[in-house]
Amino acid sequence: MGSPVFLIWIVLIGAMFYFMMIRPQKRARQNQVDMLQHLQPGAQVRTTAQIMGTVVEVGDDWAIVETTPGTRIKFGKPAIVGIIMPDEEEDAPAPGGIGDAPAAEADAEDGVKADARDVTPSVQDAVPSEVASEEAEPVAKP
Image 1 (cartoon, rainbow, N blue to C red):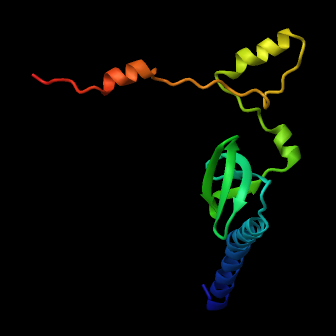
Image 2 (image 1 turned 90 degrees about the vertical axis):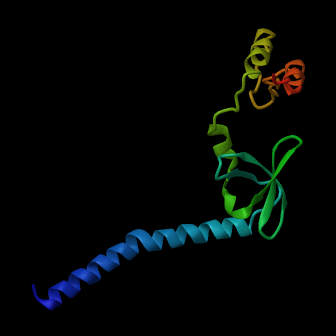
Image 3 (image 1 turned 30 degrees about the vertical axis):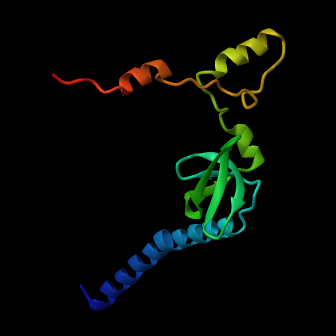
């Protein structure tokens, strides 16, 4: 195998590697940086953990996201992977929980069509407070 052929193969493999790996990663990273620089309060965002919410406050390297009314989480900006556009929000599945079904059925019986986003799920502790307090007491060992 001659040296010019070997050199051509190395150059071709290097060019393929650049155009298929390095360049798209650079472009994606630049788009991410641009999006984070233009992040403003009121924007609907999605994080790396697939937590969706509304940006309440933005700092230099952090953002506070309100996931539900009264629940605010402080994220580092790199954890925010995208801004949810209004048309994407309609396509997303409605948040469902255990407490959503009875409320939605009750509204449907009254002839009023309920929007699943307007229904707040009822939250119940997995361990009732009486059981939790009994388990919290120390047990005497023989």
